[in-house]
Length: 156
Image (cartoon, rainbow, N blue to C red; front, side, top):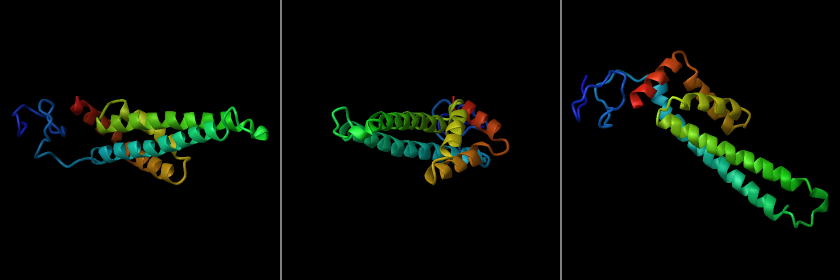
C-alpha cells in the first residue's frame, strides 16, 4: 500500500503515513483498541481537569480557612491533612494528563500507565469507576497488547 498524499509506502496496520502524517485510506477495519484509544485519552485528560480543580480548591481552602494563622485551635490537624490530599489530587491529575496524551499520541508507555491509573480510579465512585471499567475493557481485551504495540509502532 502507498500513501494517497505523498506516495510513500505504508503498512496495512498504519493509521497515518509515517512520512507526511495524513490518514491512510483503504485500510482494513479498525480493532477495538484503535477505535477507542483516542476517546480514552481525551476522557483521561478531562478526568485530570476535574481532579486538578478539586485539588486546587482544596489547597485554597486548606491555606485560607485552616491556615497557620487560623483561629480553629481544635482543628489543628486539618491544614496538613487537606494540604496532603490536595497535593495527592494534583499529582494524580498530572499523571492522568500524561497518560491521556500517551494514549492519544500512541506512545508505548501510554498503555501500562493508563492501566495502572485505571485500576486506581476504580475506587472513585461513580465517574472514576466508569472510566476505570472502560479503560480495562479497551486495554485488557483479547489481543489488546499486540494491537496497541502495532499502533505504537505505526505512530513512530
